[in-house]
Length: 269
Image (cartoon, rainbow, N blue to C red; front, side, top):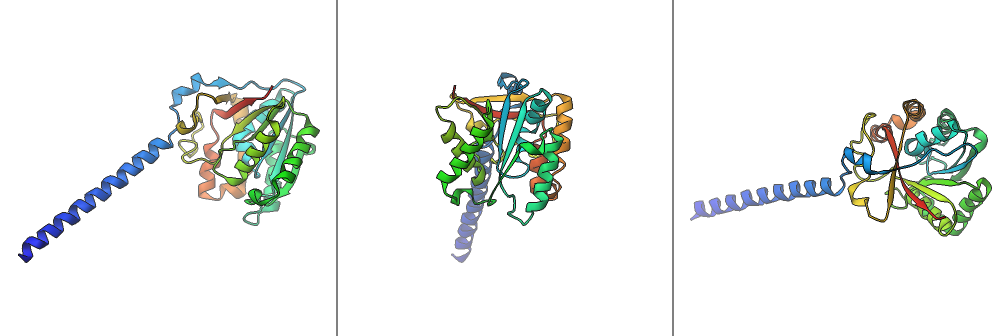
């Protein structure tokens, strides 16, 4: 009787273990599918972002020192090379880990490598990681003042759906400011699960949208980097030594060095 009970208990334990393995494996497969990107061949069906022409004004909002370079460094460098004028607004102080001054120094070096003059840099000094806590009306007014001063034909900003709160806060503010106005906005992603795929140095690959975020109403567009611009962007990314020393951040920064950059284009004209 005791032996039969023990066999029954072992059978229950065995099936519980198998069920657990199936659930974990199924969850992992679903998670991987849910957050996968479009296949590499999809790059050929995406619309293209054109390089601005001489005299055009471009305004880039960067949540932290490095976002402007990893997300849009190629576009910035190509714009400056074409004779356009690029301004970059660094929104936070990048001081979450007490590295404000070194990160400011890296920011100036990286943007300089991209061709942006220091006179075209704005330092807003908001707390790193705390944008959602500040007065949003005042915050949006400050962003609006910069937009008014620069009078850009194109605004580049983090996407409101980005998983980082600072990024999302800026994206939502820009969306509210530009709604119904004449500016064209290029939204970029930096923080999103499994983005980019693979999240490591793969310079011969394309960065593509997360499948979950591809909607019929959104204009995902690629900006293909000429080889000379690829080299400039790589050099600029490597200026962020404080971030490259962190293994997780290193994989993200180097993973954004690809043959293209990726934007969601919204035109309010």
